[in-house]
Length: 110
Image 1 (cartoon, rainbow, N blue to C red):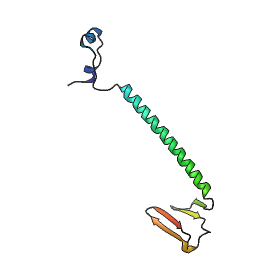
Image 2: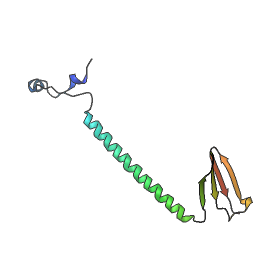
Image 3: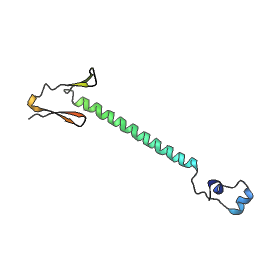
Image 4: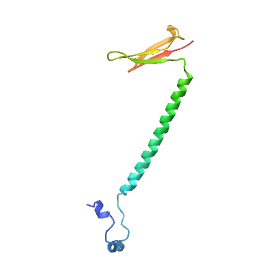
């Protein structure tokens, strides 16, 4: 069975010159780690730009809908409470649903 030591370049220059260039089956570790590091850097830059895009979009969304105010407060015990300003809606125009673990409040003007 061959191992990496059998395929590594020879220390003896006379033997290496007689056999010619020795090729290994595995790429050099430095090459693999350099490529991996470059890919990770590209992924980090992508995530950073994506995070910036999301934060900018969230800030713009908050500017466009100032009339909708919501506050979240921690209550005693295991639960929580949410206060949503719905003064521009009649009770008939509001719908509250539980979808999975989420509470969905929908207000529709006719």
